[in-house]
Length: 82
Image (cartoon, rainbow, N blue to C red):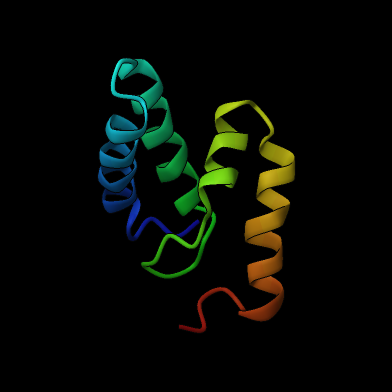
């Protein structure tokens, strides 16, 4: 697990969530938490996830999202090599 960038991903996700869901603070917060959680699956300080992947995690599809990010990313880049 790489914790670098988790807070930044949360804040970016919260800003996006508040703009995307202006009348639903809980949904905006859920988006921020999901974005931050997905960031922890990526090595390095950039959050390389898509809005679609964050929304999948918000909907409870963790396995599909996790394989799409962490597994494929690590098949290209070995953890700890950066």
